Length: 289
Picture 1: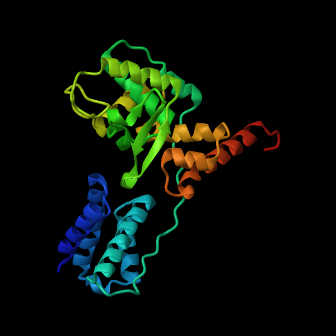
Picture 2: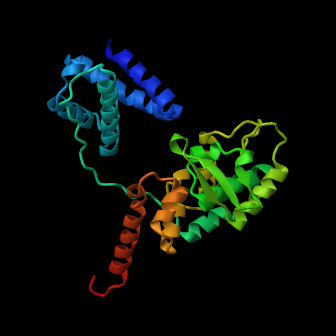
């Protein structure tokens, strides 16, 4: 079986057995195609790949100006691909190791309380604006991923009890809490929401489920309205949510639960952000810093 067929088998495994999203599977396929083309060009047998071949592949990626983060992601995909091939008996090269180079984690952009208040205070009168404000408030009050927000259904929302049910990565379900401002805006939005039998909470002007791209545009547009000179994305609001909670003293384990992180190590990036801020303040105010 050639490598193209093996990648297709791996795709089926990711979709059917791992229940990964279309976007995640497409990313795997795209990354593995780079490895496939490299192997074909260098005439390397899949069953005889060694650590030296992987090193040459990494050097190739660096020459193509791939970032360290992208290289780590691509190698992770290859590692999972090889685990699948070994488990199914497609290869028997059990000695092959794929080491991941260490990279410095880039701290995500966050908004200050003043900046987030500017965005959420923009006053316009329109049905679309109420929907947009509800989206922005929900991001900041619940720390949702953009895909989680787009996939929210009306049945997932309990405004009386003040929470929503969220399906995160790999369909892991969690409860996210709503503050009074978000509840008020969601009530307003649902009252004025375009009449539709569509089960999804946020709809576009055609009465269909809102897309990730539309949500990105909304976030960008409102940050611009507020005069914020930062690269504000939906994930920026998620990072802001977590950072502000940590700043107010909320336990990291609780933040992990609210964000839907499987591992506490993923959530720990926010403690690094807090330390960075402390260092900045120390340098600014200490007379001998």
